[in-house]
Each structure stands twice: as C-alpha cells, then as structure tokens.
Image (cartoon, rainbow, N blue to C red; front, side, top):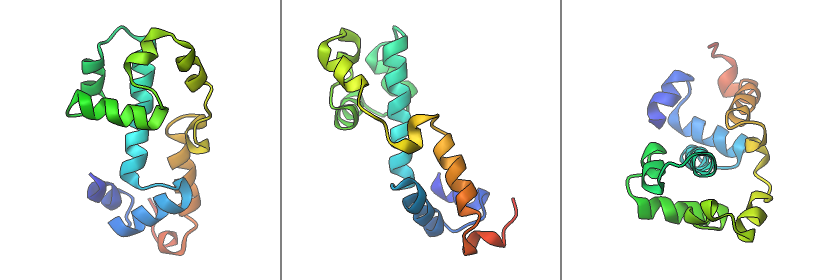
Length: 126
C-alpha cells in the first residue's frame, strides 16, 4: 500500500508521488506495474508455468487484464513470448527504461539516495 510505504520512508503520500515522478518519471503504481510485468516476462521465458499462473503469481486478478497490460508494455501478447517468433526476438531487443536496466530495485534505491538530499527529506533520518 502506498500509504504504508510513505509512512515507512517518513514522507507524505503526495511527497512520495512527487519523488517518484521526479526521479523515476512515473507514478508509484505505474512503476510497480512495470516490475510485475518484467517479472512476468522472465517467468514466461524461463519457466513452463502457464500464462494463467504467471498472471496470478505476478498479482493480476484476471488473465485478460494481464494480457492487455503485457501487450501495451511489451508490444506483443504474453503467448508470443513462448512461440519464439521473430517478433519476440525483435521485442527482446527493445531497450528498457534506464531505471530498470541493472535491476528492478536499482532505480528506486538510486532515486531514494537522491531524494534524501531533498529539503523535505533532509530532516528525516532512516
């Protein structure tokens, strides 16, 4: 929950949203969705788990919603990740946002370090 996360880092919910926007260029919920989709892609490519199970494991309530989000983010439906078509190889070569290149957590940790220098964050010591 975003409110719990804000309490954990000792800033207001709105300030947390502003910091995400400033350093990660998206909202916290959008960033979390990206993490879930990237994990889903890993599971689809590296395991024999069914698409329905992958959707469930990654926190999607329904398979159609998962497929829609996946297609919007990667440009192909999840079933095509397993087919091994040329389309899949082309999509795999698409660059990810810089915040997600090294690891899904490197962006937020780096951003948190930068955010600690913000005036609203400077008085708080974690």
